[in-house]
Image 1 (spheres, rainbow, N blue to C red):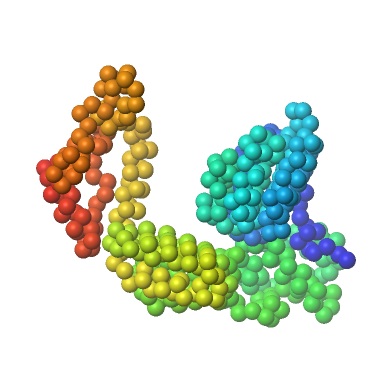
Image 2 (cartoon, rainbow, N blue to C red):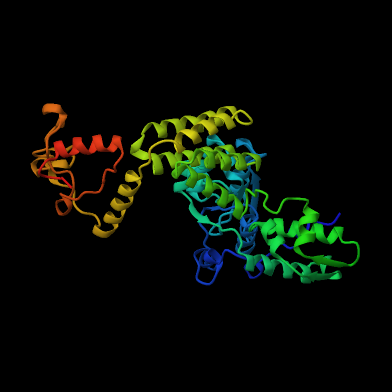
Length: 424
């Protein structure tokens, strides 16, 4: 039986690799590591069909090192330990570490991820993980800290067209047929930046053609796929457009728009945990201090969805969506942390004022560490004015309260406490 087209066309070297030039183009970070034959553990994060597995295989071939593959869907801790032991036995002195590629690493449990730490730390294996989910949510922090993170992007239309023409001219089966390409808008739209999806569509068109001539136009592509051209594609561009519309409807306080886009995601087969995470982000970024309960509601929704799954999970998602959409809005915390980070980058490592420093030793106390610090609880209302910022920034205002009732109360309290010192 013939291999699928996507597998037949999988490139064996970077010369045939399409897309991700920010990682593998001339002088790009991964290209330099591959050329130097010195690879450190890393995680590839990106949507399906953008070349994560292919890139890992190319790296292993370039380094001429043993390559082990595990799928997080079917492998357990026992499988991980067996592969690590095999890699330990097969490593030779001063040779590159064997590569362990784990597809869908976000599906590994905490204990499974923990079992990788020692081997990655000691260099027994070079880990290459592939994930379609945000690693900061799905990968444990100790493992993330031992790996670089590289983000892969959906393929551009130019990349997909290049792949299309390469397939029909070089594939051992397709090059025997005549291709008439009249229009490409539909095939690009249905592909959604996914190389594998493009090749699957191309293979379908080739196999369903009545004669040796394969015609590609928008009507034929749509008819063959038997889909609505506006169908939701959770791996492609429309995925990001619908999520964007969902969040902007919440931000714009339109519960009807928000619940509609929620329904579009549910009907499109979106991962419920992804929707719930977006609600948590929206609660902190867009509602913020105007309604602190929004964060509690969103986080409870996230935990509930993980517990009960589909189809009941749609109910807490709807409840949280409407609650957030109808809540007062504030992005003052979002703006404050962004301004603070920009200030840190601009001013560098300013010294901590002496009275705020920790003084665990006698020498430090003699040097004045912690001297003159005022313990707030020893003063009326548990407050006393003192300096908490570095000397050069001591009157800087970073949090600016907005005009909602909740923050106006906080503003009044701050003005009362900091009168004559940190007023606007």
